[in-house]
Length: 152
Image 1: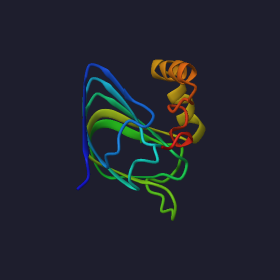
Image 2: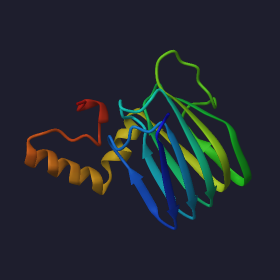
Image 3: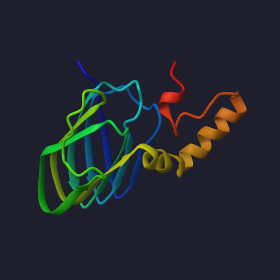
Image 4: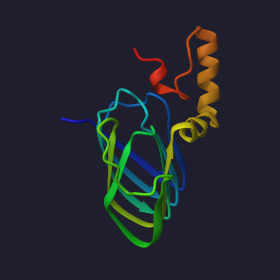
């Protein structure tokens, strides 16, 4: 049985960066808000399912270059789209993680940040500065910019 993370953003910005979960299933409810999820952690399973319930919201997914995003089961009402640097909705690769999006989105958008852009998105956050300070004080390494760099 896979763990389920429930994320609720109502007129708010929610960020989950670095090695924050081992769940393979996510339920995101966003209403006039935004959520940023870092899915680059090696602790996550290869198949990730995200069920969305969005109304005038934005969800940003930080993923590796090899991650395939499948959004065929996502229902759109009114305006909205998935913004991904790749041209196709699904990429069948032998290596890498697969993220399946389902649910509904109304006047919303999903942004996919890959590779270096995902790293920069994570680094330009307050959580990254706190992570760098913690790493400096403890003699460790920061984990938000590269969750794979510090496996336990």
